[in-house]
Structures are given as structure tokens and as C-alpha cells.
Image 1 (tube, rainbow, N blue to C red):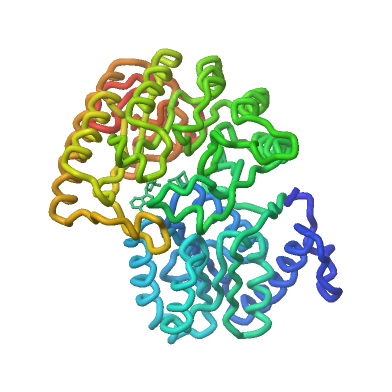
Image 2: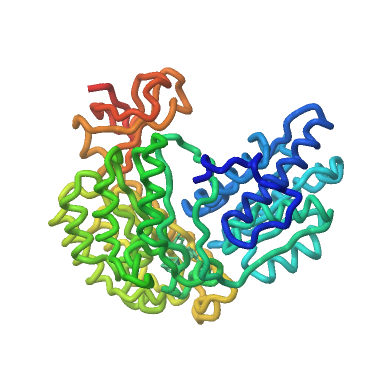
Length: 481
Ligand code: 5AD
Ligand code: SF4
């Protein structure tokens, strides 16, 4: 869609159109004129840098921001040289917020030296009213602040800022709107994230996401399929379907559709080779989805299935709506249907009221499931969530001790799970030249493990059969088979 729009044909002297996405293309065209003028004055391109600080959803949002910035005429630059720095923030844990304030503190002297520089803040953290208050009071040099619901209005917000010289703050509490067909600038030419739904209705008691990303809304299947078809025509062979809880996809559509049904439709797209998705909530993982995974040659045999805790008691307090036993049964069912499936998870330690016995239940789940990898988090108290007000906040020493024990267990098992593949030949999608050795490339296997092997940049984007020679804990050194 974007490629078909000729920005030169838009009359920027007329009133902006009311409908989307035409309105945003109007503002892209308008900003482009201003940026062009500034760039001619300076005798160099203007640079922008978008920093993503959060999850895959956040990374995908950043691609949309970069798409708009490119349309406006900004070249991509490093943060320390950029004329426009945008932090796309996360707020899922407290330390994410502290990091943003720290980086803003570092930007301040630069901005004082070059007042024409722009600083933008967006993402989940901006959906917290206390944060915006603090920014207004103590970080007055920020130029544009917006949230998660109106990211599609980025071009319009930049236009307002460029024309008014005033700080632009636009935060929406929630939205039921989904604006399609805006530009985006992908990080990789051969793979892409695709939003299938936004928001979350689960209200796990520790989690701030439902408050900052709003209610669950699914995109229409036709819009998703059209986007993927277009991506494939543009060279993409792997998609990652994104949503906070993909297993409840389609429930709120006018014509409801299950996630498994959507997968089957996506699978039919010719030229698409790999389908991934995240995140799956165990309570909504259906038999239909397990069957779809088992019967598919395109859906990667990898499932990220956050357990959060192994204690039924704690799971109840977390409002996860499954027990330890139900989770373990689900894993058994998955492994029976898809024997070579790779399982990864998220685990929180130190949730309010967690006792040593509760923690041992978590370790027990880890030992029984034997995850291929796990993200482990120390519980972070998020103001406004029910858990923040719960009694029995666990003492720091105990949490650290549990966290270290969990990490050791998770890493030992992950290394053993990885080593099982040693000597096998698997297909890797080459993603880049290796960061550590320019004579090697890095590829991703269907099960999400990485393999480094001898090759050059001509292989990037190609599928290559690789023998996994040596396991290095959580990745492989291999050779072309
Ligand atoms: N404290 C610690 N970890 C959290 N997560 C979400 N909220 C919190 C919190 N308050 C973790 C969960 C989730 C992952 C994305 O972040 O494990 O699955
Ligand atoms: Fe947060 Fe739970 Fe929703 Fe995941 S499912 S985003 S942990 S509330």
C-alpha cells in the first residue's frame, strides 16, 4: 500500500483529510518538506534513531516509527549523532523505567547544545500518568510524548511539533481503532513480525500490560493475510505473529475465528516458509492449535509457554487460571503430539507470598518440563496492579537466592537440551554475518536455536542445511551439510 502512494501528489496546502491512513500520509508529505528545507540549510541529511527498549511488540512498533521517519526524509543514524532520538519504552518491570530516566539525563546536555534536536518518547511507560507528570516537571526538554494507542499518528504529532515549537503530549487511555496500511521499515528483509492482535484482557495480578496496552482487539484475518502476502512478495519468508495472548485471537471479531484457523489460512500463502508466534497463554492453548502445529510443515516446532510459577497457590494469586498439574498435562499433550517441539518459558520469582515450598514447586516444573530456554525475572512491584497491594512481599535476600538457584537449574537443563541436537543436520535461515567472526554467518533453526558456520553475506536470507557439530551451551558451531 505504502509503495503505491506518491507523496509528491499530496496537496499539503489543502486541509488534512479526516480519514486514516490518508491523513497520516498527508502529514508525512508535510513534514517531508520541512525536513528537506532543514537538511538543505545544514548541507547534510537529518538523522533519526529509534531505540526499542521492550518486547517483540515494541520492536515491531519501532519498525512502524522508522517507516514514518524514512517517509519524512530522515536517514537512520546512531543515537549519539541523531537529530531526532526516539525512545520506545517498556514498563513491564521497574528497572525499565529507571533506564529511561538515566538515558534522558544523558541526552539533556546534548539537547541544550543543539536546541533544534528533537527527543521523542513513546511506548508502554508513557501510558502511566505518573510518568508523564514526572516528565512534564523534570524533563521539560522532551519534545513529543505519545503512548501505545496512537502510534499511527506519529507523523501528525511530528508535524504539530515542527509547526508549534511546543511540547506535544498525546496519550490515549484506550482505543478500539486499528489503522491499517501505514509504512514500516523492517530490520530484516527476509523476516518480519506481524501484529495479529493488540492489548490483553487477562489481568495477571503482577502485570501492567492490560493497563498500558488496553483491551484485547484482533485484526481482521483479511488484513493479516493481505499484509503477509505483501511481505512475501517483498522477500519475507518467515513471519512472527505477535500478540500478548495469541491463543485468544479472533474471539472479539464480528465473525469469530480461532487462532488455529488463522494459522491454517496463513499456511496456504505460497512462498512463506516459516511461521512463528508469541505469546501463548497456557489457559487458552487449544487441542485444535496442537493439531495444527503437529500437522504443519511451516509452523516452527517451538512454543513459548510462560509458566510464571510452579506453585498452584501462587498461580492462583497471579490470576493465571491454571494449576501446576494442568500445565504439566498440557506439556505432556504437546510433546505427545509434536515430539520434537522446543519449549521455552517465562518465570517470576519472589511473587508476594511465595514461600520456599512454592519456589521448590517451580524448580520441580523446570526439572520435569526441561525447557530449551527460560527467561527468569525477579518480581517487580508495579503500582496499580493488584499484586502491588498484596501482603507478604518477599525479602530481597531470599529472592536473590531463589533467583540464582533457578538460573543455575534453567541453564544446566537448557545446555543439556541443546546438546541433544549435536550431530544432526537441520535447516537454518541465515540472519546475518556473525558478530564475532566475519568469516562466519549466524542462522536460526526452526526450534529457535542459533548456529554459527563458515559463510559470507551472500547467504543472508537463505535457507541452508547445516550439520550441528559442537554445542556451546545455548548455540552451535556447525558446518554446511
Ligand atoms: N515483575 C516481574 N516480571 C514480570 N513480567 C510481567 N510483569 C512482571 C512483573 N511485575 C514478566 C512475565 C511476563 C514477561 C514478559 O515479563 O514473566 O511473561
Ligand atoms: Fe501480562 Fe498476563 Fe496479559 Fe501476559 S497474559 S500481558 S502476563 S496480563
